[in-house]
Amino acid sequence: MASIRDFEPYAAFKRIDRNGNSYIGTKEICQFERENGYREVSPEDFIFMVTYFDLDGDGKLNFHDFL
Image (cartoon, rainbow, N blue to C red; front, side, top):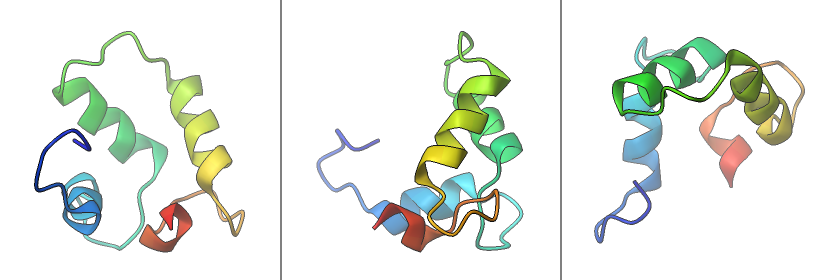
């Protein structure tokens, strides 16, 4: 998505946040990635991704974790 000329980070975050709770969990990331053709990524990869970016250690990502 970042390769799109008019990429808007918050819009991308909201697109992945399917339930609208202002957090992204591993299930939402997994669902988004699989719907967009990334089938070779394992659930463990998503857990690692959330853990890596999760600044407050709550096990989920909010938009500020990316800033």
